[in-house]
Image 1 (cartoon, chains in turn cyan, green):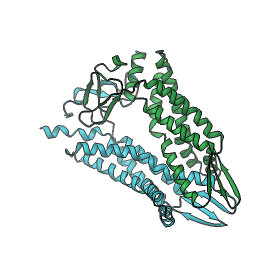
Image 2 (cartoon, each protein chain N blue to C red):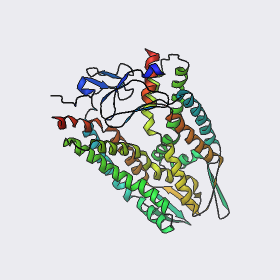
Image 3 (cartoon, rainbow over the protein chains, first blue to last red):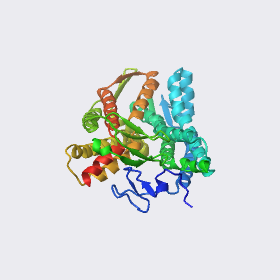
Image 4 (cartoon, each protein chain N blue to C red):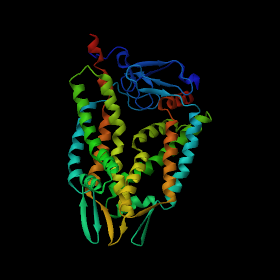
Length: 207
Length: 206
């Protein structure tokens, strides 16, 4: 029944602790060294990942529709969204910074969500090709996650620095909360995906 | 060190392949033969370097909170901002969630990690068992994905360019202190290998 590829810890009845990497018999519930919960594979990895992806997609809507910050210049407030900020930077001619914000706030979160969905889909369809490419994609989604926080940090600095009373004032907007939520939830989604599920299909090619 | 890695049998975290690392010389890295994931990295003198860099990082972090971070000059007005203020202003505006989301990953979590790292490395260097070693190491690797020191540095650089169009920005002492902190913090952590640190703890505690 339990068809794990030969040569893996799971096939030998061993579970590797996710925290301290100690190998233990998979019948144990907790790692004998560090006490972390022990699983052959993360429990309900795909369900958890998909649930978090859906949460992130829902949060991504207010993050883009609502203003991320409000600039009040001489008493006139002006809201700006994430995309609006990028467009403004392009108008000002600062293309490299526009690119940084666009990559960190738009490309990375959406690309990451698509990548995680595709990984989950490929695992649930028992795809038995391109193991290495999919592992690389997984590594990329894990690595890139926190860089999306750039825009939230930029807002925090601008809000703190630009407090010049009636002349020029910047306040944060509700989209900053939603966007921070998107970043955290997508990071959790990447963490809850178990890349070993990709390699569990290796055996079927040997049959 | 060498006896730690003698015939170390572990499973790759990314593809679950069983691998036996026979020896791992100083400076060498063991990678999974199937998926290429780094299994263990033996940094020469890793514990010493980790402790030295975390001390330097802790001092720089304290300095980065004491002095002006950035200041702004526009139309004869001058505005000085300190690092804790970046969260405090958000809190005053009612956005305490964003204040936490900023201060946690850029300061709170890294500070906790530095303290935890020192609490692990010092007993290991003295080969002195301590009851907190295992919970401390679990805590360190639990926090690790949530520190965003390097992301904040990029965030600061982006804001400099954004503000630069409107006013003159002056970089304060704390700005340079934070850059030093970021470099030392990352250097401290790259000298710690999760697999080998746990093998040291295992050898000491059992």
